[in-house]
Length: 409
Image 1 (cartoon, rainbow, N blue to C red):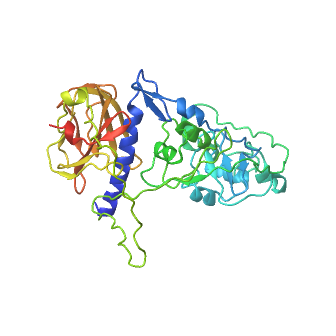
Image 2: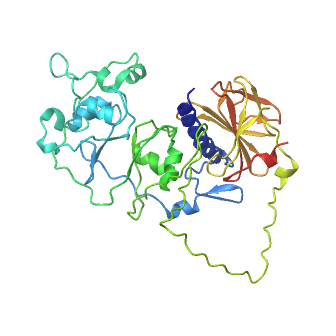
Image 3: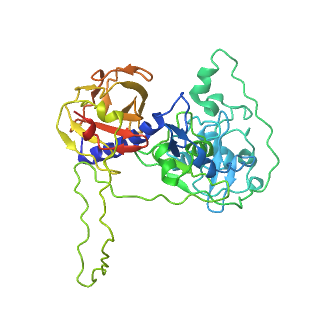
């Protein structure tokens, strides 16, 4: 694995693992998708209620929502990229490429596709493309010119779902042509998904509710996103547009730390005003680790630490271990989540007493399942083969990552 690929893997592991750890810390199996507040040991949505998102505008007869700067199309049940393209009057290949899809792909009901360019009003389109949701897609007409090809319209998934049933399809009547209505409210920001990002990380970037993000874009129940997908960022209930995300420099494995610019002789240093303290400043008290300190964790694998903890840059430690090395639970607890990030790298989260979470990433051959009770030292997986091979391990107290070293013995 090259240094560049390893850097991409590290970024995905850090973001995905950290946020999955937070989403796993729930009580009574209730899930607070926005992850806004944390108090008394459970997630709270009180702050999120103050930042509620508005509903997505209603699409017109062709499924188009028009804004001054761009347009999007909303899919209906049974739609493919081809049928949506035919309905709005665009080439299927152009619409598919712009949305990081393949032509003919079956879409979810309510899924949003961004149009690569503005399309004409429904009244100005020819009958083949100006129809409503029931209009036949390009190439759907049979030899007689009046049939609809079910395979093209609904792809193989519909064929399997209707196996043994008559393959019939009735075209709905086309709605009366209407002029495109341009939304007059706030225009939502758009975000193009990059490798390693998840719905949770994007929602946190813009400080919006992840459920609202899913509703606005028609995401599936697993909230999965794909690289290159264009997402609409929900508008606030008061019409406020989400601010652009802030970025910070993150040093990945194999890269040198950024060097600050040297002082310039042409630009003098700012003047410092020294004020003597009236009373001596007392050092802050040592943090109370509570039950966690008394019941320390064990190393999940034995090996050299090749990258240490650094708040907001590396929220855990990377432990060198050969591919196939057994990974053990660092302490007694319950398996809270087992998932994969957008690069397909497995991530496992264990919830312990004292509101403590441990996160294990870069895994393979996971031997436990969600909800299992595990004991300290119990094998839970193996280290994934990579170059170099390592285990990424995090400890989280509530919502905050903490340095794992004081907890390990």
